[in-house]
Length: 343
Image (tube, rainbow, N blue to C red; front, side, top):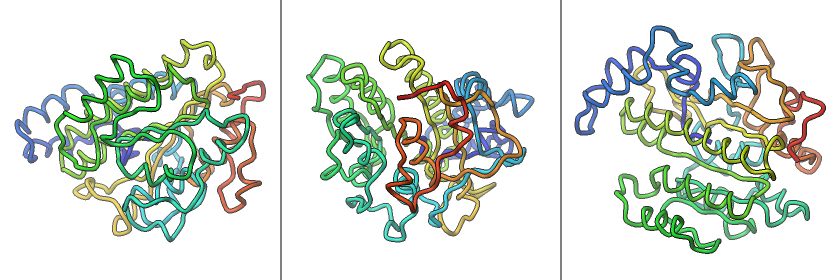
């Protein structure tokens, strides 16, 4: 999941007005940063710009998978929790339903069981589930004290596998690197820790939560928001390339990518929440053997983040909605290739 990544950049690429106004932010060399981002990602057409910004998403997932959420062509993806910010969005996505008790971003234990915890209770998946995230609240979102699988969040060192020189270095980078945000580590050490665990433990179900997009957006730096989005795309590609190189995953694994909420339009692009109704608007992408290569979806029934948990379970041959009737249904088009199998 890519925290707070707007659908507008996913489908339209760089916003010409926002990049034009991006120079005078609070960061050093703000104008130079904006010029670099504009040169790197802005193009003469939206299709070219979005491909420059998110090349893996558009050359792989947009060709061999499915992408939802482009409202310009009749595709709607959104959250249903009514709050339009992070913890409620993650809870909805991971449990299949919004919960009015989850109404803040406080790092408290989630009273709800996520689809990850539900799967981990099944013999086939027990001990083969893991979650990694840049934000410290993932400890609460997954209820680390209760869930029964590894959850590694923010600056915490990862100790649930044998130490290797690479893992030791990543733990040092978390502990000793610059801290701009007290509750959120930069994405790279968290992401590469997750990759080390994939190579070591070969989990069946894996969560990775990238956070810099949201933090840079709240900080008002459109240039760094774009750079973080571009890095996120590179991480998604690196994860996909790794699993396609491993026999235990190759051609039997599904990749799902989406945010936890959207953002405002124009001058409100930095914001989200109940006071910004359009921040309920999201997007989602799927790539794997069960999913027909329908590409960018047009003029289709709306999808919601509440449908993701049941879709994850269905891709693994499990019926989550039968156990949790309040959750959204699995997205049938994602399960549209009859001979595929992510199990």
